[in-house]
Length: 140
Image (cartoon, rainbow, N blue to C red):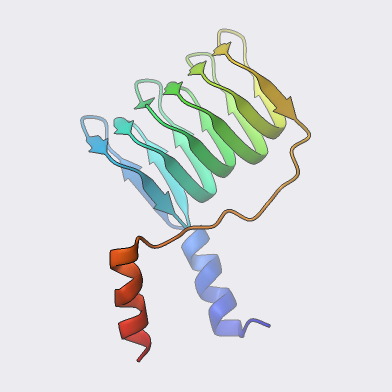
C-alpha cells in the first residue's frame, strides 16, 4: 500500500510545527499535515492533521479541525477534534465543540453546544486549485 519512503515522509510531516507568532495576524485559512501553534491572531479556519495549540493571548475567528487540541486562547467558531481536546483556564470558546474526549479545566469559558464520542475520521488537507496544477507539473 505505502512504500517505506512514503510512510516515513508522512510521519515526518506530522511532526512538523507551524507557528503563528504573538504579534502576527493571519487573514485567511491555514492547513497543515503537521502541528499548528497559534500565539497571534487568525481570521480564517485552521486545519491540522496532528495537534492544534493556542496560547493564552491567541485569537481565532474561524473553525478549527485537528486530531488533538489544547486551547488557552479565544476561539469564535466551531471546533472539531477527533481525539482529545483540552480547554485551559484562560480559554474562551464561542461555538460548538465536536470531540471524542473533552477536558475543561476550572476557569475555562465555553458558550455553545458539545457533542462527544465523535468517531475519528481522516483529516484531509487539500491544495487550492492554483497549487494543485503545480503538483501535477512536478510529477510529469
